[in-house]
Image 1 (tube, rainbow, N blue to C red):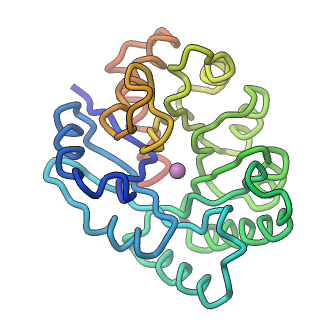
Image 2 (image 1 turned 120 degrees about the vertical axis):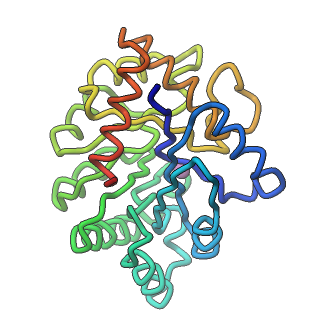
Length: 253
Ligand code: NI
């Protein structure tokens, strides 16, 4: 039997400090044996690098989050860049644009995003993209700075998803695809070639049904994965195999 995987989780978050071991044990029970841990801060990154569990293979991503660009100075950027260059950093992210929380600093967000895209190009590392209420600007910058990557927790239109696929991007689907009001996420999974799909929890947020209302965790990615396989009419084992192939094609072995 193929394993499940979580292509985007924050188990280095405070939300898991008290019971991380239980969370990791439930990953093993659910056969979620691969996970990409996303770090937005250097101390979270140090913590993430120390997380180990026999039977689980972790990858690591580091990036300046779009919501944090106001506090970023040159000295801090250099520290991020230094860590991104190291071998234990598998991906650059999550990086991108978020106009939902802050519309006043668009230019600064774009500048920091583009700089990290260029750095990823230079390092030959994939990017993990966060885009909220900013899909056109995200697209424009990615088109100008081609680098392989994934649109994490994709929540925009199926039409735009196809455009990102044309740029070479992967589309990662999170818990909302299982929610009762999920219509566009279902259109998205049908519009995107299955060899460009990924699944994720983005835990501790965006908990899938039937755990909605609880803290999210990597073992719950199974609910999202099963829902997508069912919607696409793909046998679960074949779907898992495909998702594993996609994950390794993007992030390496
Ligand atoms: Ni995230």
